[in-house]
Length: 419
Image (tube, helix red, strand yellow):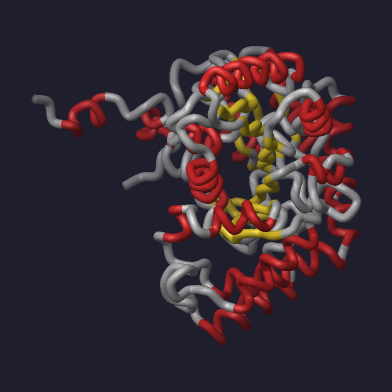
């Protein structure tokens, strides 16, 4: 019998195998200083495009005060226990009520974390005779939730409504054969890697021909899309057709936690059956009160979303004018597509950080196919025109170097932190 640890230390995985050269720089870097458009990295100021602080709320004085006051009043321990047993409060219920009103849904359940919350919700909703039809580029939290599902699941090509319908036909045929079960379709409001919105309106239209319920993960759309910021459903005019609307507080709200909105009867079922909340400590009071303040500001200060979009469009239009491929994004998420291997990509990242003062996230294999590079830029309401101009110039110069082969290296440049 083999030691279960033996396999783990022989191969740390496609990203982990580079840890000895990358840890603390390309992976697990430490940004320091006040959260904002400019922070410090290894003793140098850099323009940061890697924080999901869309509306700039993370360090807003009103937010800092609300967080500080709530922590002083309650500490991080209150309330103790899971919500079902001893961890409920009027503020938890107030936040749920206000979120439900904001999303035009009957009810909301708070979730301690977005990732484990949606995983556990899928587990609670779907039984072994139910069928899930989902977009191929769904977030990892959805994929992991489906790994818990004991029934069938059919994937459709990304944003391909024709293929979605084919998978619905397969699912319908299986349900009819089983004579039991139902169908749940899962898509996203905004796909966080490519920035394109899910084709929610077209999926909702399929309800005229097929019987299913629709769950939408709108982590990147909440607060950034729609007239009021209610998300992709509002943006596309199909919010009523979304049966379960999920989002996290980690993006526009710059906080911790998440929520799911939907019909009162279904949310109540989830509330009494979602294992990740029943068997976990309640969301601490400072986060709840802090999120109430964030939601208040999101609703009362549309200028934050307007500034975010001004910056996003300046950045995206500038990249396109300089000949960069930013794909089909129709959100503020801004991917920049290039060609090259992992060593080349990391060499370019190092040049951007060390010589141009630009800090952005890099996506390479195994997240995307070998030979492709994506630099994902996340604009915020706090970025300035000077930040955008400096970034566009830096990308132009480093792209020229990439095309000229100046970043050709045999392996990832050694930039790990010294022990």
